[in-house]
Length: 250
Image 1 (cartoon, rainbow, N blue to C red):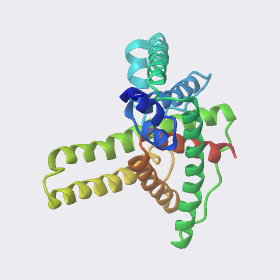
Image 2 (cartoon, rainbow, N blue to C red):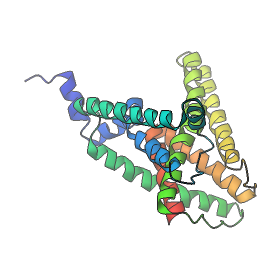
Image 3 (cartoon, one colour):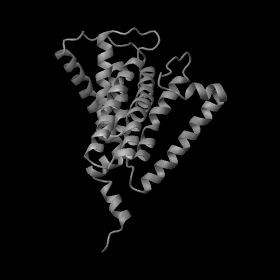
Image 4 (spheres, rainbow, N blue to C red):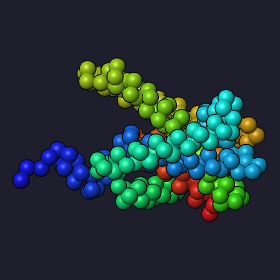
């Protein structure tokens, strides 16, 4: 019996290769990372909350233009769109509950490896010892981590790394070895610049710059960029989120 193309896609999505393919899909990434945005937004509604992420370019604009009601309406719309997309992607075999669980597990493993790897590199470089973490309630820590995982990965990885690489590929890819080298150069420059800006952004406001925290965050930015390039936005966002949860809670 002949197997349809849709049937092959459904079967492929069930295996390991299907998991790696679907979690790199922009459409799937938009759906599976939306809970991070909603968790962050719920935290913003907590009484006395001051957890607005520096990379969050939208919330203040929405509140200023549409007020709290507009903010709630937009979040309700996001939930509705997310549910519709979930149903569509699930019917197409591109989104499975097991994939979501695997995504969280992968993000947690990568997040733990990130922390240990960066600390090891800094220890070898004989930089300063690590500072103590923040003492936050669990709900606040989860919301803070969700905002960092969502907004910082959008700005510093999706926009500042993915954007220049996409433009470079459109301009030069497939036109010869030298042009491929230009794309690689653009990618390297984008990764380095975004990682430096990622670190500097954490020092905007009241937090002073010290060598350890600056280089720790810059190296973390390099790792997040690598995860983004290899595994896509969704994995980078969940890695960032779960790593921050471990740091802030434990």
